[in-house]
Amino acid sequence: RLRYQVTPRQGEPNQAPAVAFIRRALADRHLKIGTICHSLWLLCADRALLQGRRVTCAHNIVCDVENAGAEVVYGPEGTVDLVVDGNLITGKHPGITDKFITTFLSEIEKGD
Image (cartoon, rainbow, N blue to C red):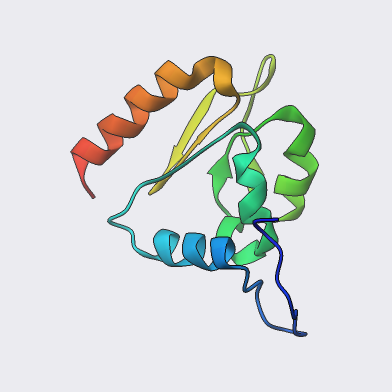
């Protein structure tokens, strides 16, 4: 539902309110954006949001994320737990929430 737009138009990026919000937030390099588990799927609604970004995510949306142009980072046991790519911080699943929050706060404290 977050990716839903009433009237899609050819050649125009997804205009769903949540996607438009994420687009504006990612454009501001001073803001830190964090996604964990399946939430990265929201960014798949606009290829420009993930194109060339290094990320991690839940195993069952890897194909969608890669098809959206992201580089999913893998380790010996599937996708890695955390990836920081500029102002985008991604986490694999809720099992690493503490590590994710610590990293997210550290990135905020660093500033740019």
